[in-house]
Length: 452
Image (cartoon, rainbow, N blue to C red):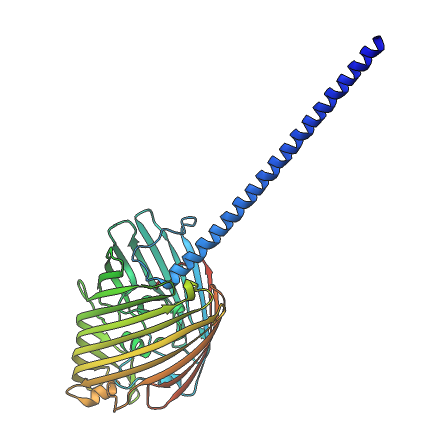
């Protein structure tokens, strides 16, 4: 009997132990399944986050490349105060003709309209510091380092502030900056599709126009991008000039644009510039061993129109894209022309009308390769009381119509580097010139997106 009790107790204990072992095993399995499920969820969340980050970057790049830029600047680069960027630019130039004898009949060149030096030279390098000053203002400071007439020069190119929080589509910019007169004029040279400026920019603006002043712009709350703006400048910079107690020149501009589906976008603009009582000095001309500098005193106005079209398949700007760009300008001058340092002093009245346009197409056919073609044409009608004075100033075209055709190819390993080869068939003056450029452009540090 006692043995029976002992056997029963042992059996019950073994059953209990077996039951407990099964329960613990099941508990361990449940915990392992739970841990595995948590690991799967965490992995899935990480993948989703990575996909969203990649998608946001691609959307930002696409919007920057295919949509007209709003006048409201996005808050960025808050991690650095200031954000610093450097543009390294250099060029090798080869000409059939002597670049020192370059001229455009019918146009007295001024500003920085000369050709790049032959051989190796420093291009248009820049040092830029920029950042949001606070939640209400943005600031930018740009030094340009370039070579002119064999000497390296450092120039304060831009130093301006811009409002961030006026609201209702209004923005104010003040200081020194590129004028919104035209499309290409607002862009720094490293953002151009060719090494040199269009002929109409060279002849009318002396390559590019900037000055000290104030800009007010307004973007309307409409489905179509519509920007209205005006600028007031000191009037000391070419193509104006001279001393002015207040406003020396005024500018007005209108830009309109939008998207067509997901692959197409466009922008069109008109602009107008006017200056009274200016003193515009052109580049000097040699006459009987003496340098005679043409000086125009009078009134001047410039009117322009531009049209831009861009295509990127499904908005994917990084892989392929195409851009068509067209601009037309006309300038009217009315006043007095004097040849400084002439003996005796030579003078003439001047009534001048100059106009020109360029059209270009750039095609990025692979992620790292692009090519472009450009055509320029100029016209002029200049009259005065002394044709010899106009001739000495370079304002007599003798029936010649300046034209130029250009083609370029560039390798773009990344958004920070570019190597470019360009050829110009330049008939802007009577002796046709074959021009070849090899250019490098590198970007170091923070660099914001370019305008549309």
